[in-house]
Image (cartoon, rainbow, N blue to C red; front, side):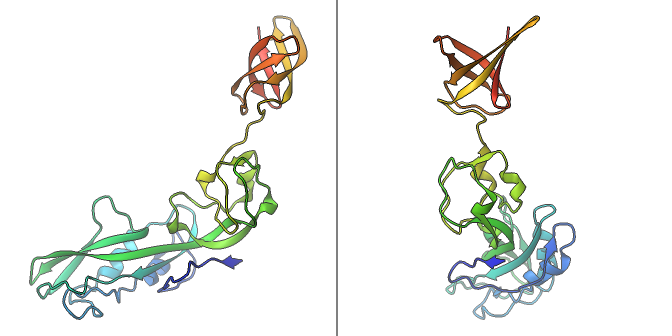
Length: 251
């Protein structure tokens, strides 16, 4: 399996595989909280009272259900010009609307010895297998299993979910071009049309006690069960429903 690491990433706290339902050890390792959390000048040391932050992050990092991912955290620093009063105990929190996934700021609130709130940048990565394009692929292509390799990618670096199951390629087409090495995401696929504009398709006209079979040219593209208009050889335009590779018209 190939591993893709964006250049310059500093990866901390590597761990083994974790699942959404059983990931305590990986989440604990991903966030050992030697976090550069100092609210004062000594940025490399965690302030007193932050011993529970590791357990808090363990509970807070949520993985997609059923996925086997390895969680890692890259810790940023407080602003070097920041000067805060000494704090006996600081509590972390997730700002409203934020999620511990990708780049995010966690909050720190002093609750003993002083009264202040500040924020610390964190990058949460979730490494797992995904399909990546072997070569550049054009939009509209019907993807084939040979178009992709399996590589380990950072799921948290993408807006939609990476795909790892090649069975999901069946009957679908690409919604956008993919560069070589780019992961395949759920948003990159849609159902492929069963019939495309300009194609000649079988047409079955059914009525009470009769069925007429002919051919017509599709005036649009449509998928299974969708409506489509076709033009017969005589120039008549009919409206029917895609049924497999044919158009069915009921009278």
